[in-house]
Length: 207
Image: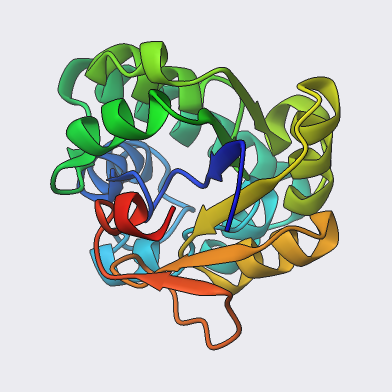
């Protein structure tokens, strides 16, 4: 397949930040008695790919919407501060793969995350040099498929693929009408895909 660009999801595709996020969010938990018991890693991994408001509703179903929004804002603030200090866990051979791919294709990130989250990944791990543009739900309020389309349109891309690890990523690619590459090493289970990779370096042999 001839392509000019690769658009990536972030969590479960480029890195795993759940250990650090769990630590940050549980710090907020410990100071909010009405919140809940500490969040487990399994619970957090089960929310990857969801919008922040949907994560809040899933983890805090006993609280009203306004309270959830306030607590999630505190969680995201604490998370960003800790990620800037500790970073996340990059998937094997990530930087080498991105370097190789960026020599031939334009690379992008589109995520359902909050404002500043992608920038934290880029800053801590010094990855900004490989990516042309980024977009997220926190900036636009749009679903992933619409954000993928925004990136395609503003960068005048002609033949893109989207790489992600969840059904939501697949749905986003379908909305944008581009092929979906399933990162099977991530958090989700997807059966409808155009390509599948077992590690990020597999992209080099596919494209």
